[in-house]
Image (cartoon, rainbow, N blue to C red):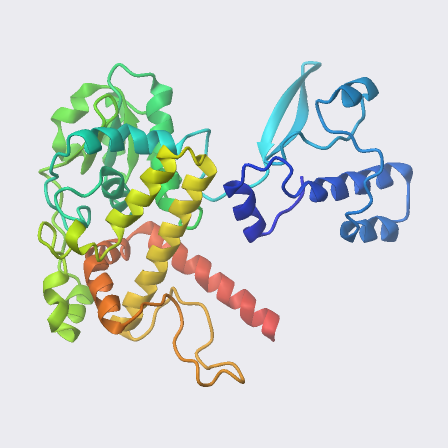
Length: 397
């Protein structure tokens, strides 16, 4: 398989073009054919930069390919690498995704997840029980935002599919992991249980912040077992009345102390500070954009790209929050001093039009950020950023 860079994977994931990066497949095939011919290694190595050399390459699945029975062929769709595995003498065709992301497991659909819980909410909105980590836009926060917040802040999540196939609840669990990950954050699938039952409840409850799929309706009658229940048949979500309250953290206290004028915006679920009339968190505008894309049939790749942008924005705002409160952030990777010739340019990271807008958005998201800062995905992300920083330093030196 051809190796793609990070940005090339993002492009391929978001595009429906079946010929995107086809030249990388062509280069790879030319190198394999040269190896078969016994050409010198230096000649083969130089082919990596020669996309013009196409030779007699055939598109997989075409009539010419079938008749020629060529060993190597260009895939019909560059999103998938097609090959065969011989099992008991039988060649079994398989397809391997070319561009994959962390926490992306299985053949799920974010569009299906959004429609399952978004359509009932659009037709007949029902208020949520308020929780600062989850209802970041008030009692009528969009259910998908509630779900994303729940995964980010490591809540116990149950997908209930009574009288539904187990595969359906499994796909919902895997979609929720990818939703909050965006291909950027990690640590969700390791504590995900695509399908479980009552016989394993004791073991399940020992796992902090699990995401589980079940079909037994008994789970709904035990709110002490979960923090958020997602009912697939009805498309409704419910926040448990037994959920732990959000603690007052050091970061929250310091932010309110440093910015008393914006203290009322913090955790202001249910009032005008975080509703549609004052969408300082940006959640309502983001979901409106996602729903427009779904209605316009923009495709699964586009929706996943939008969620990746949302998660990336969240991590950058979290870094800005840490710098504002603590003076530094473990999530920021860069140099403190300006590059030569850019001494007049100050600042870094996420940019706001003015300081007031920055403090309003930080205040609107402070509870979600503080809830995330004590989770597995936060510490994993911090380690990843630290390793990137060390690689950058080693390359500079």
